[in-house]
Amino acid sequence: MPRKLNDMVVVITGASAGIGKALAERLSARGAKLVLAARRVERLAELNRQMSNRHLVVRADVARREDCQAVVDRALERFGRIDTLVCNAGYGSYRTVAETSPEEMRRLFATNVFGSTDCIYAALPAMLRQEPRDGFCGQVMLVSSCVARRAIPYLGAYSATKAAQLSLAESMRVELKPQRIAVTCVMPIQTKTEFGQVAEIEGGLKIAHGPVGQTVQHVARRMTDAIVKPRAEVWPFRPARWAFGLGTLAPRLIDYLMNDYRRQVEMVNPRTTDSSPVANR
Ligand SMILES: NC(=O)c1ccc[n+]([C@@H]2O[C@H](COP(=O)([O-])OP(=O)(O)OC[C@H]3O[C@@H](n4cnc5c(N)ncnc54)[C@H](OP(=O)(O)O)[C@@H]3O)[C@@H](O)[C@H]2O)c1
Image 1 (cartoon, rainbow, N blue to C red):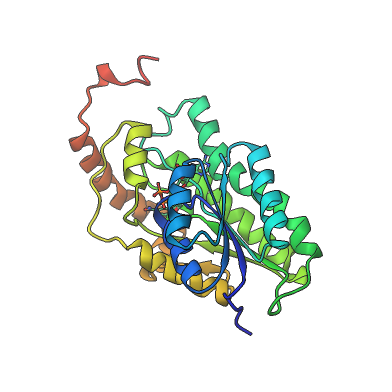
Image 2: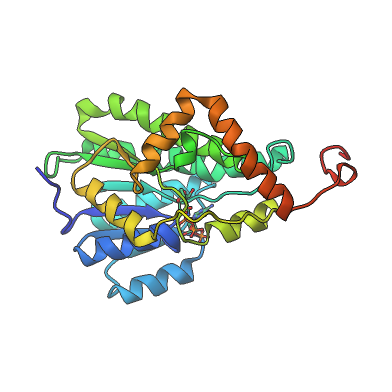
């Protein structure tokens, strides 16, 4: 039975921009009750205003465990249940693994991985207690990435966080099935959002974007379909599922193809051995 979006309670982290914002707009138009969480609360308030102020806005930095708990508490206080939790907040950093400091690595995992697990840990008890709605007690949706299947150079640390999200989803999907909690992992390819801008600022490298990409509206549409009819994985750009799957079957072939990509990035970001931040550490 498809889940009705009308009056469904959906919590979205990272709703102030990009994919999260597009999903909020789509779900709001279909009658869902939303909890919009992010750090830039003024953006969330403006988004809520555009949607007739029907939703709940919560300022939250998901890297802080207490903020994740507060998002869930405020959602339950206002709406009494959570039907779908979308762990979408995240960012990347264009930098080699060798140049990623231990502090940066921890910061990335704190947002992308622990920001997901802390929200899930806070939300699951309520989902397990609540009455099923359209056959499900709840749904956890993690916004991972195609790079979870096969990491790419200059996004190694980020790819590791996305692989962690995918592993969590794969385990939870089976563990929570008897409790009628669906778990869905979203695997977008390059999508036009603020992601690239943030990753360039964080990592300090310029990356030329490839010709293949998708819009936030397309990703949000596919995510909405998977909220209505929960499925294991959502690949908004379907051919990517097979292309990235090949990475697990033929890793050396993909390494070979990635070498070209590395050379392109090196051309845009020229460095001498003397200026290498790793050698000079
Ligand atoms: N764009 C792509 O090419 C692409 C591809 C695959 C997967 N993804 C994934 O899609 C998700 C959304 O990214 P996007 O492309 O929509 O990027 P975006 O436009 O930069 O949006 C990122 C969202 O995450 C929020 N966020 C970041 N750090 C946060 C924190 N510590 N606490 C709370 N919120 C935080 C931001 O809100 P505030 O800054 O206001 O807090 C913003 O709302 C991410 O998980 C990303 O890894 C993106």
